[in-house]
Length: 439
Image 1 (cartoon, rainbow, N blue to C red):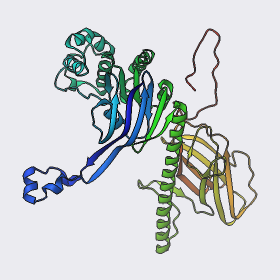
Image 2 (cartoon, rainbow, N blue to C red):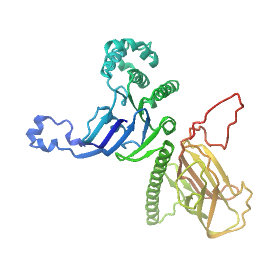
Image 3 (cartoon, one colour):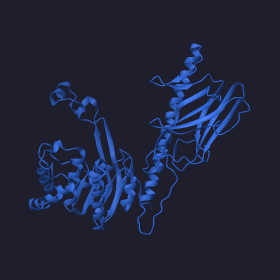
């Protein structure tokens, strides 16, 4: 038996440009473009021919990037929006926590909003009165319940909305990302209440960007992209497929940015040649130097590769990385050092090394060649990183220094803090029991 059933559902929105703004009925008639003004500039398909069945008593997760159609899907199920095509079937009473503060009137108190929203969600006036203290206590708003809702913070909005939604005892609970604004103490309470709903075999449709929580609490997960379902199945498998798609998109984005940067560099080099001046430094918009040195030895190309030798810009913490440098010397050199440095987005040096620090003795460098520094395992936390590469003398004199000209991204669902993810494990004595949430 299905609690939610959608068949061939589409939802199309009309998008209007700035030319429609501030236009009155009178001005449209005078200008003679009334019917043209009613026509949308663009039709946006938020949900496209979607079919979905959610069994009663299951916790069903929906993941996907922003704009993939997740929130529109929940609005269609909740009845807030109507499908342009297809049918939506729901079996049981729905309580939806979709938009922060939706249904709240800002000018009246929290007490009055509880009464209004409770009745809108199907409770009688007597039931609202009976549940009122529990709603306020769970939301932790005893001191503010008689204040106008417009004075509430976003977290207070969320707490009151969630408390009302779960206390109407629905058959189906729809939750859309609102837990993201909850504080560290309240979110665990919400998740505990969701677990209680699961034990009571209520149907939950849970939309979130918190993939770890989705994998933990959901029985099945759907991945949406471009208004369509790409995959439905076991949570860990679907989350991994989504992360692989995100990594591929990030890789393409990095490549596009690299091509654009290379194009700009080529234009700048052409301008230098036209002016007859040999530049020794490159700068960014803020005037900070990004490359310097007289290039007695020059780094002509830098490529990041994975363990298989493929060019890559998005890595996982457990991945290896090879930094490949194409170098050339104008004259033979006997004093030279190759080095790299990895910085996080805050400018903190995460790791740096060079051939001199590692006791490589320079012998000769002439003509063109290739230098490769292989890192067996990155062990960095999630985030964007910037790479310095350089060739210089042992006393530090720079031949060619590239500062933060190259970047890569480490993609991880782990919530480590700091700089690096150190290899580690946990052990517990028999009297200490914990259950791993990994699957």
